[in-house]
Image 1 (cartoon, rainbow, N blue to C red):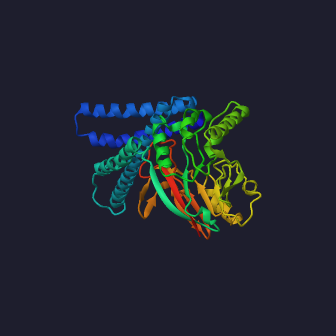
Image 2 (cartoon, one colour):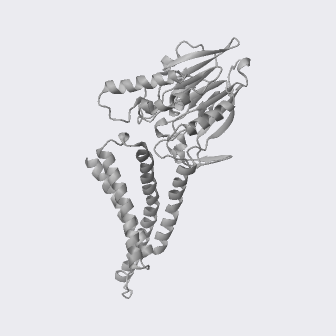
Image 3 (cartoon, rainbow, N blue to C red):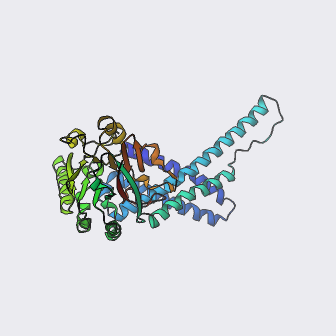
Length: 414
């Protein structure tokens, strides 16, 4: 409870500080206008703070989806944008303090004539702060309206060592991070799967996070998931959210049953779920190996259930290998040092933070300061990693600049 009160206090401090900018901008307007500004500002802030408080008292996972997803997204956008105003008000305070300090020094140390020392805020900084804050505010709002279902196909040639000739030009499609608990209906998902099937893929991979927390989130979508089909199969692995680690379960038995049901759903969808195991894919007598590892992370922030030794077991060094591993942090820290013959690793997890800039020749997202490999293709010697930016969304129900991705690969012999 103490942490909740401290967090609420922190948000309230932001509200009080930012309100100074609104007061300053409205100071030359009528008193009625100033009252309206104050009422609107504090009404929105009060609703946000009450909802944050309630989310800490009552498990928000059990709230209606629309409130849980969209209202909390608005709270995030609101306070994220306010931080930009805070930044400029702090600059204003530093300027004011410097100005007052200089004048006091001039008066008492240098004996200059006494003068009035102004401590008032500069309206310029408040104006700039509010203008700058409006950019992420309206961008993030538009991302909710326009971004979450703007599915984008990316096409990449992937060179694989010792690739058998019959697998040359094999078309592989990867999707990741569906987070079905965040979708309002299955219509956008059907649209995405239609785009996938139009490509006539030979193989389809799903690299984890089918749900946010509960297997029940996937139940309404089973018939849609069954629409993904490929001649050589549809293969999947689990992501960090699939284990239900972010919900306070009444007991371990209930949590275990949830995971069992989620695994069953993969099977009902017609997907082969790989749980620290491998399969050999045969095409006209030639073979490649597919390795699927459970969630494996190099970060202590996420539970690791993966066992690469077990997943790799029984494979010869000569056969070409593709690894499905949800978290890309495992590639550089675990795959490259110990498994130099794993030719290609496919991951997801980062979502590209659902926010950033991606134009030909340049991409940026704040998530790159957390994950060294966060989107697209990375190479080290003969090994490659591709990080899919996710098809769904989590937390913030939208995307700005970083669109939901359908990765299409054309396999080539290195």
